[in-house]
Image 1 (cartoon, one colour):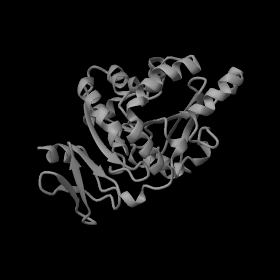
Image 2 (image 1 turned 90 degrees about the vertical axis):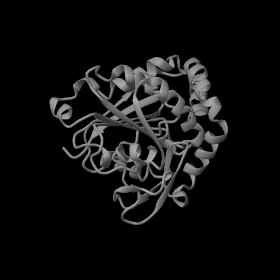
Image 3 (image 1 turned 60 degrees about the horizontal axis):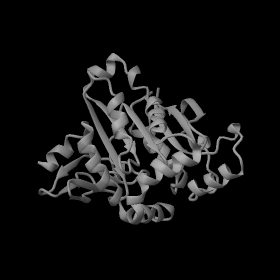
Length: 276
């Protein structure tokens, strides 16, 4: 039953992008390159372990060991340091997806499909649930590398009321076919990825042509004239980045409708589309 449900979600091999089939009841197999991907606790592991290296491996180890402290840190410490509550920040992020701007063509093509790359503990899911039009059926996928974070996310997903599927996957090789999603977004990790350019290209690949792709991460809003304490606090928040900034120069060559704005004192939002 688990395998059938996953195969209905439009998964593809992250290596060769061929379709996946069930291999017994606890694994998926690629029909192209014959790689077998295990399923643990209902979550498929759709990545190549040897490709996880450098900063990606380091951040996964950090989140796997300290994941229990992530949500309280964001909820209390970050809100105190930058003066913007977590709920306000997440509402602003979801607003940039413009879910209320979906046209009738997307409605006719079936359920709304949304992907969050680096879903973490799923803290955006309740806000996403509130923003999805009540008359729209939606399928949400969340991918991440951390087992600890996804374990928390699975519990939050069950409480969200959304149809959520999760996978352990590498943002540099997403396990989905081309043009699979009506909306794609990512929050809080791309500045530490080993290859942001490839990750952005993958988000663009799995998004339907012209769909908004929203990326959020740390960048100090200097127009707010932050003081020395704000600078020090920001460096603590963005400890894993050498030059925290919006990766506009890393966007695919065919990116259009590029927008960058300060989401809060410590965060930017970058939105673009491809393939129109």
